[in-house]
Image (tube, rainbow, N blue to C red; front, side):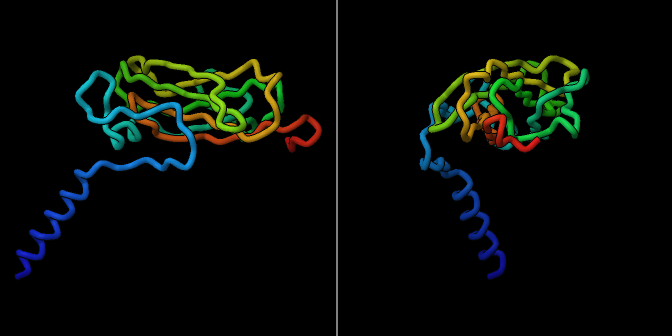
Length: 164
């Protein structure tokens, strides 16, 4: 009896894990994940997430690719250079990483791509040219291969109201 229950539970778990997962469609997304893992650049969601970690936003970056604690922020003013760094030490050389920048009202405002090089531990994305950015909510989608692994949310505030 116990073996039959365990077998049934295992079978249900396997079926549930093999079912497709549907994304939350509450907000528009111009980027779409590719299904499957049979094409170049395809990775599974768990593998993609394991390749990238410790995303940090800030206004300055050190030579080794880290954002110092005093420069870490998710509040910027128009004209700030925005740095987004991440640890890619678990990603094999050749791994594609992409950041898609979105502004207020989910308007896509840019995309940057980099490839992890041999021996690389930190990856740095730089977004400048923000002088004309309006105040509001922004985000940076982080993609590894064909999988979205994170959203880093930040705000642009007027120089008068920004708390620095």
